[in-house]
Length: 309
Length: 309
Image (cartoon, rainbow over all chains, first blue to last red; front, side, top):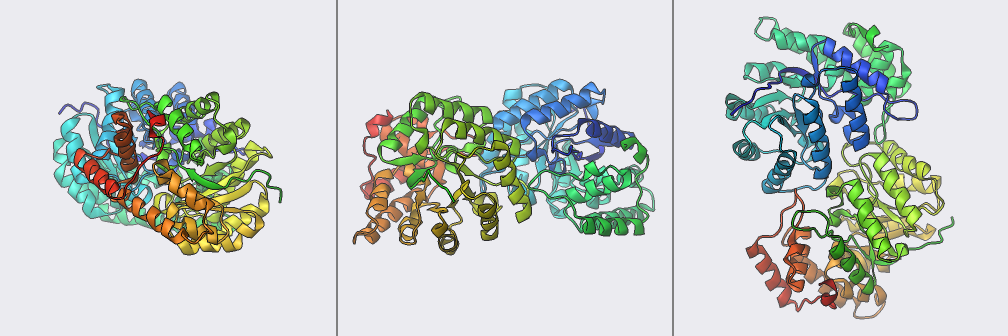
């Protein structure tokens, strides 16, 4: 197995800011990505929390190109490139690889339910064979609460055997630690990098030999996550984990994407940040106040927030 | 309420045939659509059973254009135009309306789960407002077993109030007759046309005042469905319904899309018809034999099958 590029650490599915007309706000997007990188957070653009499926293929091309043109390092990017239509997945994956992205995070086709491992194997194989580029590194995106299409251990084993080097790891957003633990045991020793799907399991994942986490709330609370990633072997690690959990719990009182956007709008004073695309709905004023109160009670702050303005 | 175009009868989510390289087979598609129209079955191209979500937006444009260029009547078409990304939904819906399609069948955005009626209302409203064409007729596509995103009665009521005339009806693929009955009672009298999501409920739907059915197996067993639709008030209607149910049960032993394609391959001798795109998998030889045996036992035939060759 020859994995040369190894992405590790804390990544965030980068929130996609919108203008008042719900077109993507390219300027805010570049600023937000730049801010995340400054905190040592990698860029999983086009993830679930990026409202990626609410963006057209053309919009994703434009946003990725905008980051590249702004000089942001492709090696720190792990764009989501999974689609229901494999032709779209091939298109965006190819673009990401040619741009030098460190990896791609790939959803399985998620419309049909109850599909077989054989069908899912063919889905990933179709994309890999079509892109046909040795630089391709795929992180499988296991998020059954949303897709309802799980990526089983047996499927990972088969993909690793067929495409060693290309199948680089997984984001486990099952919310089931037993599943993450099984992936760590079965596949991490062979160089398949297991990322926890949220910071909730960051410490446990690091203790199990994992590669880090890819987490929504990295968009708003990156510094303490990166600190725990770097110092997970120190004795205050459990305490740091508990602090992360407390902050996350405040966000999770509400739908997470609108809540994170509301927090950025609050801290930056830029109300445009509140906007989400349908079928999501922004927080109302009362919800936003409750969120702010809960975060204030924890002493929540966003360092260098001025860089987002 | 001013609904001028009323689609009624039996429609089928038209199977999308593929070539050996899994590109859409345009010739077979045109022949199949022509054959369906000859049996009095309307064309719900780009439905669930069309593998619509496995097609790119550009492929859908090309397939619709191919039918129009072949001279097939747009008034008998109800293309599926729902996408997770509303920009795509607007694009294809606009094209369908400008082409003169009798209606469009619209999925809600289906990636995010647990979204609110407010978010779904905004989703449909965004498309309607952007297309901004009085000819638009939307049939809402309620298929919670697949999307996991239901279209509630309260949402229909709100959409009907906001967009009378444009919100034209529903395909109810919930599989829950109580839900269909509630739609018939609440909305059909106001000119909102309720289509059963399969022929299983065709007779019950007609007795309840509904508009017909939109059904997968219309692709392979259209004549008896159209016969029941036309003669549902005759005394042998229950017997006809039972015969339809028996045929469907044979197909439903297997994943439905590959099974229907296998049946067409069998009856036409054109093995290319077996192909499906991942994540679906074609029937294997043993499954195909079981299917053929079950259909033979019922005396199953496809009239004018030579038109498909």
